[in-house]
Image 1: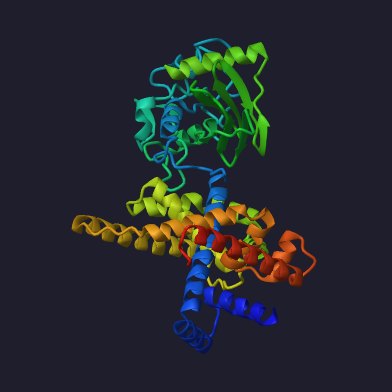
Image 2 (image 1 turned 45 degrees about the vertical axis):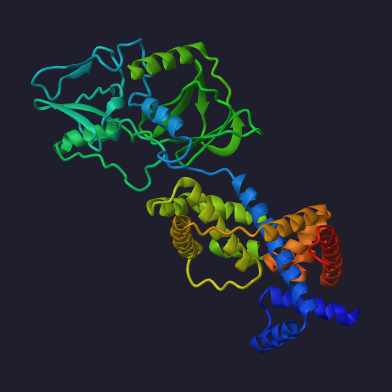
Length: 294
Length: 179
C-alpha cells in the first residue's frame, strides 16, 4: 500500500508537470518499457484532463452568474434597451428649486428681451438660482427640452442669439459608455461672464449609465452609485426613463416606468423601487416628462 | 479591492474574490478583444479563460506579480486571443483541404470519464478538482473544505481518486476499451 501510494503520487506529480527533469525522464523511460503502464498513464491523463475540464466549466458557469456592470451600450443584447434609454434619457433641469410652478410654461417660455444683457426674465416667474459672481445679471434660466436627434453630436447644442445668452445647454447623454471619450462642453463661444452664468445655473448633464439585470432574486429593484443605475428584475418591455433635476450642487433623480415615478437614491444596496405617491410631485414629473419627450 | 488583497484571497481559494476580479475588469478586457475583431461572446470567453489561468497560478501560489493584476490579465487575454485567431485560421484551412479528423474513441472515453466524475460525491469532486486542476496545497484544500488537517485531505484525495479510477475502469471495460 505504501509503495502504491508513492507510485500514485509520482503519477500525480508527473501529470501536474511537477517532476524534475531527471525524474521525468526516468519516469517516461519506465512507461516506455511497460505497455501496461502506458495504457494506465493514458487513462490517468484522460482522467486528469476530464477533471480539469469539469473544473473549468464549473468556474466559467460561476463567472457567467456574476452580474456585470457597465456593459458598453454598443455590444450585446442590451443594445436595444440601451438605445431606447439613450433616446429617452436624461434631462437636466436647472431650476430644481422652483420645480415647475405651472404646467408647460417652464422650459420654452423664456422671454429674451432684445438688446439687453440685463433683461432676461421668464414668464414663468421662476426663482432660479442666481449666479453668484455676475452681479448685474438677472439670469433666470431654464433649460429646454432634449434634442434627441443629436445624440451622437459631440458639440453641445448651445445657441447664441445676438449678444445675448441663451444659457441652455441641452445635450442628451448617451448612456453607459462615457468613460473613454468624454464629451467636453465647448464654452469657447462665450465671453467670461456668460460662461459664468452658464456654469452657475446648469449642473453637469446627468450622465447615468443604465443597466438592466434580469435577475430572479429581485423583481423590481435598483442600485444606484457612481452614476450607474442598475435595474433589477423584469421591466417588461415598457420604456423607462431617467429624469434628473439639477440645481446648484443638488441633484435629484427619478425613474419613470409604465406611468409610475420612482425616486432614486444613491446607494450600492439593491433596494425595491417604490412608486411616488405624492400627487403633486407626480404631476410635476409627468409634466416635465411630457415636455422633454417632445 | 487592492491587488494584494485579491491575491491573498484567491491564494486561499476564495472564489468570491475571483467573482469580484471578474467584475472589476470585465469591460476593460472584453473591449480589448472586441477592438481586435472579437465578438462579444469570444471576448467574454477569452477573458474567462484568462481569469482561470490567473486563478490557477494564484491559487497554487505560483504567481509572482511584477505588475498590476490588470496589466497581467490584459497580457494573458491578448495572448489567448492571438492563439484563438491562429486556431481559427488553421481551422479554416483544414476545412478547405477537407482534413477533418474526429477521434470518436477519444470522445467516447472522455464522455465516460465525465459521467464517472458526476457520480462521485460533491466533496470528492471538489477535492479532486482542487488538487488536480487548481493545484491547491493539501493544507489549503483542508482549510477550504473544513478537514482537520492536510493529512486528512491527502487520505480523502487518495480514496476519491481510487474510486474514480475504478469507476472509469469498470465503465471502460463495459465499453470494450480495456480488454
